[in-house]
Image 1: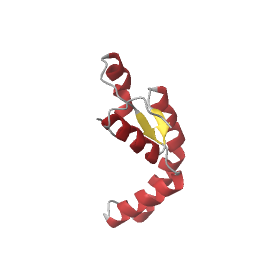
Image 2: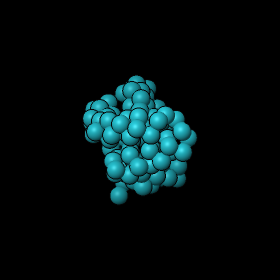
Image 3: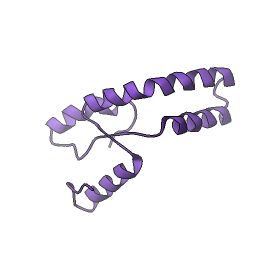
Image 4: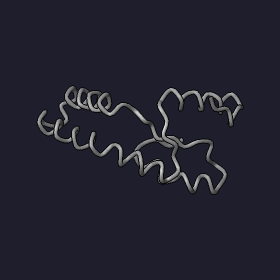
Length: 99
């Protein structure tokens, strides 16, 4: 299992080696992600609030391009609930079970 913004970098190689059970890029509401990230960063006092807001807006704007890149690299865009259902199906021994 790999997670993070660079996880899609290894999708093709894992698929080639027969190691890939699934590759997903989380599709979340951008506004909610912005608020969640800002709240976390403000509570951790990572940087000045103004810097955090500016950075958060930049990430908010960049998110569609990041998702497109991840899907180009072989990850499937999906909401968190769908990813959880698919992983549960894999763990239950039903690797091709989709809704």
